[in-house]
Amino acid sequence: MPETDELFPEPKPQACAGASEGHRARLRKRLLDGGAEALADHEVVEYLLMTAIPRRDVKPLAHALIRRFGSLAGVLNADPRALAAHPGMGETTAAALKIVALAARRLAREQVRAQPVLGSWQALIDYLTIDMAHLTVERVRVLYLNAQNMLIHDEHVGDGSIDEAAIHPREVIRRALDLGATALILVHNHPSGSPQPSRADIQITGRIAEAGRLLGITVHDHVIIGREGYVSLKAKGLI
Image (cartoon, rainbow, N blue to C red; front, side):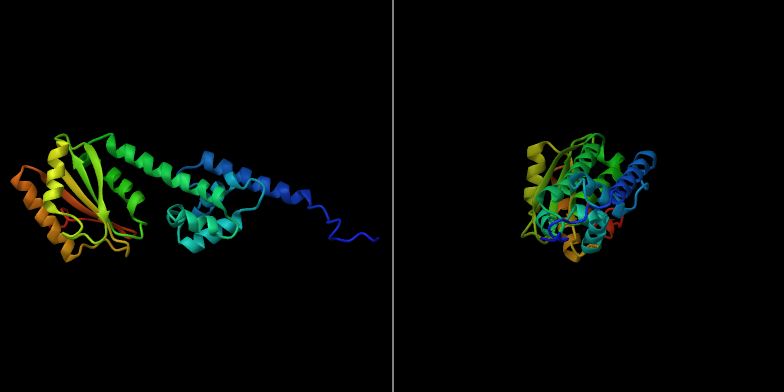
């Protein structure tokens, strides 16, 4: 019987494997020798994919993920099921990406906890942006601080629009007293992307600040996080 391509496929040229290894070595050297901008966003995704898929050219997959989810942050913060279901992915590869997002959150959180919040404002904003900017639901949190303005508790109050149906001023202040907190920072995100405050955001902040004044609890700020940046109500003169 004559030999056919189907039964006896041509071996893949070794040059292809060598070219791929050479590309990976160059990425690795740029990563180790360069600074924060050593790799482009798609190359960061590509390098992460390489750790989970060691014997495949993953550059096209990295570009496809960036196109689908919009950015490096969009890829790392994507729903794990959506990542795993993407063509060429799977649970193991999705996990290789999600562990980076988890590590980034943990690192940013530790930096916030290690020093007074008001004296390390950018670290707080970085942490909140990593944790909340890409959420698809509106989430409300209260950061409770002690007399030294150290973070003692980060409480997830609930999901949904920030109004008195979702966050009760007296409950927020009572929780501060229970924790021994002397101050707090309100935080929530806008899934629309724009962090500009609504009338409801301003009104509920005023009610909580007034309830706090009666019991000696200071509301330092209300921070709104969005993909387009953040807004501090205190900086805007709204507290």
